[in-house]
Image 1: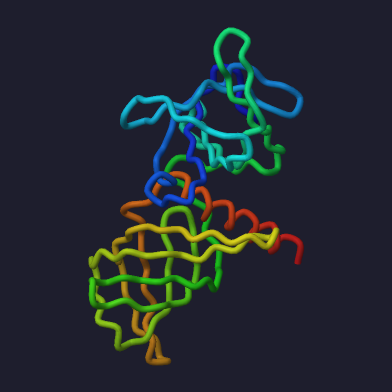
Image 2 (image 1 turned 120 degrees about the vertical axis):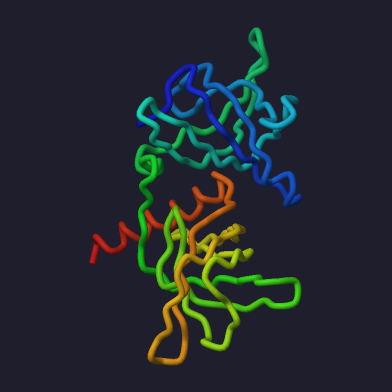
Length: 217
């Protein structure tokens, strides 16, 4: 489902500054063209100030339907119009590039991705995921790693896409279950406690691509 005129969009703009990249902005679709949307100049959700964007900026966006489902897509700034009010022209996504996530429901897929885990300032380790999803991940690590249930950890997940690009997704998670394995390793199940919607979108995009690959086999 494509967004319609007057639909509110929530945006994140790619930036070399990690702090700015995590900021969330809000806009509204003013017009829909054949290959583009014209949207209001984005407003910082926290400060309420207008945010300047530039041609070529990469955007992660989502909008919410009446039933609470979220629709995610990626786009880029194509230009501007100055008819009455200044509008930003962004590329319209293909229908198959929009991912829908029902409220409280997240797709989960098996995947062996690299994840860096920070337990404290002095203890960090690498692990390999067992599965990933929009609500959390599970990973396998050495049995000697001193983690316990309900620990909160900071993580960075390496997410590869079918087009060859790679994203790093930061998040914080709560360790909900730890299962010792016969191999001497341990399986750790984690749910997200802090993750931005655009970063969650990156994981969801990977899951949908992974599911498509499974269907083709």
